[in-house]
Amino acid sequence: MTTRDVVFPAGRHALYERHRYSPAIRSNGFLFVSGQVGSREDGSPEPDLQAQVRLAFSNLNAILEAAGCTFDDVVDVTVFMVDPDSRFEQIWQVVPEYWGVAPYPSLTAVGVTWLSGFDFEIKVVAKLPETA
Image (cartoon, rainbow, N blue to C red; front, side, top):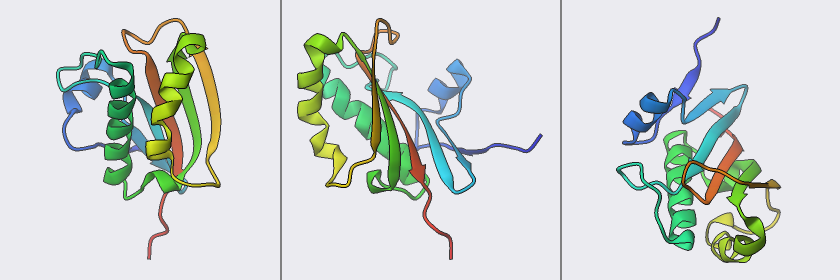
């Protein structure tokens, strides 16, 4: 078995150790980022929905940065939302702050009933920068 090429952002290592997953894996020119939520430093959910979405993007961007990427390198996005019928518009008011300009990445949005106390989660696949 080959060793996984794991990317860790600054901080938050205990969160990944406790739950036994890698924040992101480099493979074949791509970065596969685990779902990111709007967790505070102590691991608890940010209670305000829009602040929680911003914090999820901040956590995502920390991983992208650690791999030498930005959101512009993202090619595929999956978002999970608890109760999207009542929360989608609030969430999508925040997304353009991070999304950039067209052309946008592909997107799959999934309504769920449980995210371990969170209301929003985002996972992405990004194209890694070409190495010289």
